[in-house]
Amino acid sequence: MSLSYRIAYVFLRNLYSYKRFIVPTFLVSLVEPLFYLITFGVGMGAYMGAFGGKPYLHFLVPGVLVSAVMMSSSFECLYGTYIKIVHEKVYDSLIATPVSADEAVAGDIAWGSFRGLVSGTLMMTVALAMGVPPASVGGLVLLLVFLVFIGVLFGSLAMIVTSVAPSFDFFSYYTELVITPMLFFSGVFFPLDHFPPWMKTLAEFLPLTHAVRISRAVFTGEPAAGLGWSFAGLLVLAAVVFTISIRMMRKRLIK
Amino acid sequence: MIPLVTASGLTKNYGDLVAVAGIDFEIQEGECFGFLGPNGAGKTTTVRMIHCVSPVTSGTLTVGGLPASIDNRALKMMTGVIPQEINLDNDLTVQENLIIFARFFDIGRKEARARIAELLRFVELEAKAGSKISELSTGMKRRLLIARALINRPRLIVADEPTTGLDPQARHLIWQRLRQLKKQGTTLILTTQYMEEAQQLCDRIVVMYQGKILKEGVPARLVEDEIGKEVIEIRIPPEEDGKVLAELSAFPCAHERVGDTLYFYCRDGHALMRKLIELDLPNTLNRPATLEDVFLKLTGRSLHE
Image (cartoon, rainbow over all chains, first blue to last red; front, side, top):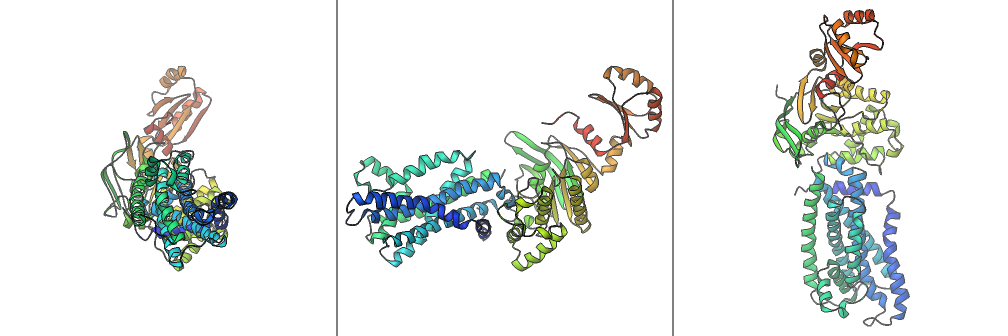
């Protein structure tokens, strides 16, 4: 892999180009998760009584927070990157400079991760405003750092899809068949306890399950079983997926 | 003198498709070297390999003594690319496009601002520094691409069909700027389908067809060697060819029938023209031979699609 500090230049390019509509795009990425919090958390939650000793909203917030990160970084590396490759030809102009194709892709994944982090931070602010704070300040800081890796993980996964996407429509396979099911089978909205064993096993293979577990532990302050494994697993997975995504994108970009 | 660019047996395959079929050429420092050819001849593929964005399949290609390989940063640092497709950053202003590009070449902010002011003057876009790309005409966009390609003060400029889609005024302005750069000692590599452009700018050209180099030389010499000085076009039905050719057999001109036209290629067309006037043939055109005639002779007059 050919990576250097030039990744920062690519990130900077994205920052420059987004500064004009930074507020609207970041707000839009908040709407969907907020929608979940209000409809499920406040609306439905009112009929659900205590959920592990606390209102349902407290259960919901940590999961919705990491899903917001997943959504933001995925969409950026699907649609955002595809537009830059096919429509705006940004990649063509980039790789004709000393910036390598690998750096261009890594810079975009970094950007996707950053957008995820911003969504996550905004969600955290909303959570605090709704009276759902993390258990400790230390935990909150750790969670924010952890969100960067979650952003890299889902940004890189999306990048793999983008590397083989023949058209825009292709992305709905990924969002509808992977992202949306993941949202419902990773314990974001309800605990996985009542799933049949095979579904529980399946859920263990979804990265979001582990991200939600970690996020929830930060909010409850109670370490869940296998938390360390979840954490280590996600970091390793992020590194592996990042490497694969760079290689696959190189195949698309260098001909 | 050591050439700046040397290719030997340079080959590029895309799967089963042979885009460039083992070509050899040398480009001297300070010259303008043109790649001519119809669509799909392999011109763009060749220059993409020269500026290190497309890997060489086989053969060797060196620029400034270094192998032109993917991610050869030293080469990319000294090369400016004027792309065929306008790939300016639409989300940024004219000025921002150049600032970001300067950054890609590790040029500091202060130095970048000075260079940008100078470059915008050079391409006559000073007044547009704060404009969005969408507010520029095609000619302005093409000029901005030139400014962008010059941000790193390149030793080598690769221009891939730099005047496609421009009106004559805009095209002439770009030609002037490219000639100015050459005067300053920059080496220029140009691909084009416009024969006039090649004649205006290039010291030497190669005509490419189906991945091979058919001819190499100085434009004016190529025209003279391949065609002669003048071309006479006679538009008569093919049935009359025999009769006319019999009348004109004494003249030392090559001839060719293409579609509705009988072409004569002569060193001196005057005598032939007088004879044609005697014969009272309508629809006759006498014109100087151009690179376009060479091009069409070498690559054939049929469509390349």
